[in-house]
Length: 568
Image (cartoon, rainbow, N blue to C red; front, side, top):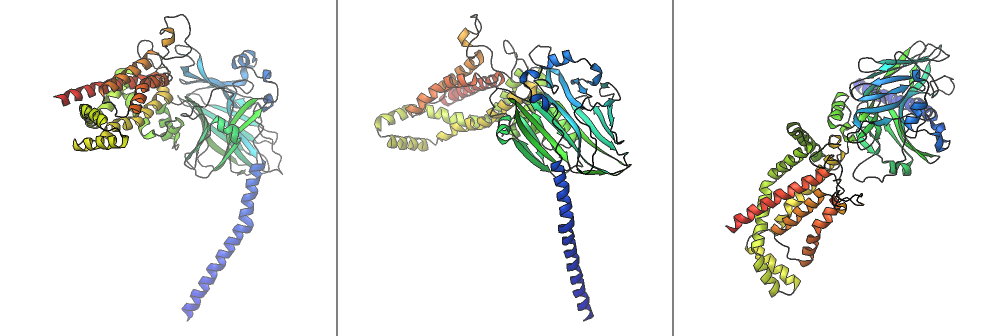
């Protein structure tokens, strides 16, 4: 009996404990968390750097060259120099607002480096900054702002020489930004607060990338450009055009590792990588001011309380550079960044595109030319598909041998349904599957699009030459039949170059060695395909057209061999 009473008391005590915990959570913890959340939402980021310039006329914005030509105080910058980056950091506002890519140039054989970041008062405005937000409206804390002049420990930032930026407010609170740089594109940003005031402070660290982007180019449906990020392991992509419609997208990151957010273009990327210990809210934002399209991405961490006499620090990273496959893979592994390689838009056939790139890159290392690597890659693809293609081409050769019998059936059967039935009976009698001829084509469709992605989006193909007039495999053949391939002294209105024409010729020859279709309408359509695809593929990267031409040539040789074999 006593044991029963003890069990009953235990059950009652457990139930009361649970009720107390639930009441504590509901009446105290939840309101406290909500208050903190409201404080973060109410304490918005400082006014966007350079936002005042957008409210002026567009003539108030200088181009990049004018800005640096007119800037008189050269001492207000920390200069960046490593094998991959050139530029500077503005000490007014601690802005990463001047970066060029030392290994990439705007034009083939040019000497002007590709510009990534530009100052806030320029038409090419594109920069990153880090700072703090006050979460306690009852405490008036002086924080760094866009006009704050930071003190730098050195005027040179390179892999051997990190730089410390320091600013102390009137309350004695010291704000420190330690910046280091590797030999590629990654900045290490350590935000540190030393609270020398008599009171505790409640702050949130933030990071932001802001950009003016008024490109008149149409969106490319096969390539993502614009805000991008990974939150809680999920890739989020919003194009510039979509952000104009959406205006703002907000994400809450709760996991502690692997998140990142930034702005991506075809070949270049800028990315914030918040401290892995932080939970934060992220925003993608578009604003239209004075006909200027302003885009920004930012993160704001949960509240951090720094007691009097104590300090707090957080370590973020900023990637700003070229989307080179091996470089992104390196950082993905080093910093455990989830899906970081997806900043390169490999598309639906990612499982093919990335391996294809590594094969082509390996062949390039052996052959020394990406064009030759493409030709050799085509041979490898053909060898991989050889058994299936042999079976298919064999069936096509047998169908071609049956053509006299099919023509006889066509004369005998005037009704289309009876003709199709008679032809299918003939195929069945001869044990031929007419659909087998479609298999190699169906398999080559994902291969074609995967290779298209390799040539179109991978930076390694940019400015990669072949032979002759092909100086860049990532752009269309520059010649055109309309000015006799450059013999006539005017610029052709439409580019239909030599390689697209060669591709069309190989398609025509491939049709000749293949059995004709029994449907006259289909036959007419197929005859038009070489012309249609010649015009269509003329605007595709020349590397892809070279692949398709060489692939057609190998298919013709294979079909001729099988036709000859079946004749014997």
